[in-house]
Image (cartoon, rainbow, N blue to C red; front, side, top):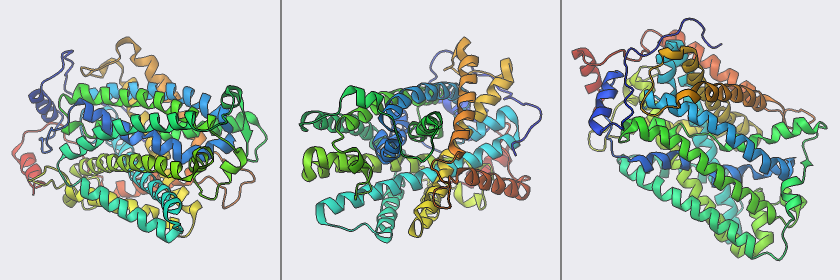
Length: 515
């Protein structure tokens, strides 16, 4: 399904080792073919903060903790997090190097287009876009589930599927409104999010370490293997258990998508990706260990009536009042995460529309002249996320299948520009942030790892395999690729990334996007 053929690389060279001032970034964007229309109001910390917020260990680790309990248990969760984090860091390092060379809102698909050609860019873009939209749906629906659990503890609220979906829609609307303001607000919220996550992990782990009278032993936390999958092969179960970490370590391409709004983006966006991964790697390990040490009743935690195992751990360890307060910390972190993901997805919609890849591109690429924010792209992003989550009203399995688009789409999309950069060899023009002689070994580790985990994403996770327990990720991937292929034959004549900017016609086309 992926295209083959000759390689093409950017015709421009820009490899200064000195961090470039803002004006040079605008010139670089013009060299890449785009007239700047978004405001560079985000600094280096803000760029790091958006990827850190999207990874959100207080969202991914907490939401998927129950999956980890039944799929390998504590040993696989803790050691798997350590190992997967190392490989994801390799992916992030390799992706950061390509981001430094091509700092645009289109990010992954623009890199693939420049390094491999139009079809590579097209398929990468669709995988990336649908992964980002699936991420909004998954993050905000997870926040709705935790909000339901919080309201249940506090007010006796019964979180039915319909009520949870209504909470989900309210969260989507909140994130849309917040993203209509200029990027400084997004940057500010993401900066707050970083400290909220750090403080939140510190408080949760600290309380769970001090308050309970009983804690699990280190041999349990780091050595207990539990298999609740129905599969007998422990190696298979261990491999599937790695997905807790891999599911969480996604979304760090957000730094690249906000590069056109970041000062010194060729350096700051690359650093943002790498720093977000290693910071999340450390903090996530601490969080998982803190939760696991505090388990009072393993079976009771897995079978909790709250449907949120971390909530049950908190209830058993410190009581309902304390658990309610800690849940509120998690919910706010999840809201930060969803807001950051909405920003990243909307920039991807804007960029893809700018290159005429989406139906109605002329609408979605419009930018507010007042806030310099792609307003229609924001509304489209949350609207499609709402559509993606509709099956949750009828079937949890169906919703899980649809949101699998997130990881099964976005993870291969990370590897494509890395692979194409390796294939280009010395023809690849490095940006100011690069890996030097480590570029190729780290790049190949990244590509092989992504190929491995993409297979894991598609394997059945429970036995026996039934309609309810089947892993629909492979079907989701096939649907994405089929849709992309069908639309390619409709839009292939209009879709194109610019080779160079500067003609009167191109300036006029860009101007039409400013409202």
